Amino acid sequence: MDPEAESTGDLIGRPRHRDVWEVAVSARASSVWHTTVSANYRLFWLHDPTCEKSEKLATALSAASREVVGWAANAVMVEVAADLVSIDLRIELFGQAPATDGSADLQRDGQLELPGGLFSVPYSLDETFQRGVDLPSGPGTYGVRVCGYGRTRARQLQDEGVEPGGYADIHAIVEALAGVERYRILLWQTAPEPHWEYHDDDE
Image: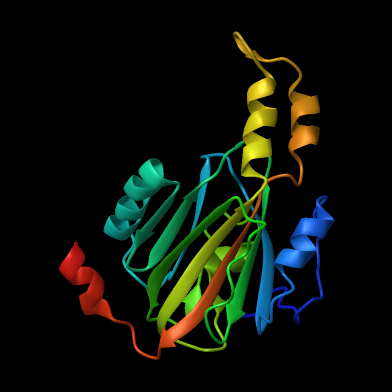
């Protein structure tokens, strides 16, 4: 499946902060997918749904709670700054490692093994992304870069709205937070076969 795949530079669901976001997605990605994720649990993740996930997700969750972005062999998990609104997410596929993005206030690199040749975003609001999206480049080992935008501002807005005993005006806070925090996950294949032994040795 290829939901909402788009050519480079053709944006859909443009968030409010258009200037920074458009610069960020202007690199030469061969495929771009857009979705929106629930932040109810203050995190989201991307993984290969064909892999056993219990231990892998526990590893990624533990790391994310310490370092914001947590890695496991087949999963990457991100702890978000604010949990009152859904968050814009783009997954972008490149032919090689893309240039770093100076506009991001979070940027972490890692590696995933995707033997099924697809990715899933379980907290996506789109069932297609929950089930899994095929990667045109197929199974393999992938370099991954997580870029976050607007995290500092989102945390500030949410914290400012907190009063003893609860939020002062939840509707105003939600409106202010809409479109502020957003993420990109960049993927590029580094090998056509998953390197299972790399992570097995480390766990």
